[in-house]
Image (cartoon, rainbow, N blue to C red):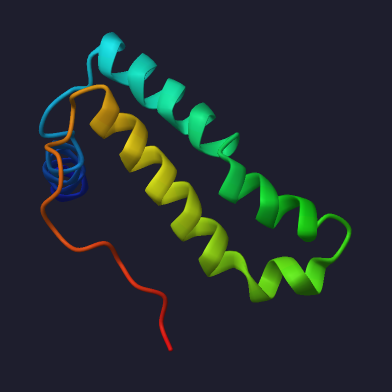
Length: 93
């Protein structure tokens, strides 16, 4: 009977976040997520795919990448991320 309890305690200890997110960080991330959703490149993909499930399935990678780029640009403009550096993910061939 104690073995399942010990296992449960061990698993719950492993599931905790390493660093809790502050309310300011969460608000900033939500604002950048919202800004990314209204980015012209994202809106272009969404408008072209309105009503076409096939188009959205074929362009889900482009949509994800456009949202990611817009979100990173927002975070960079707020001084959260350093300018430049790193390589942006490329669309698979």
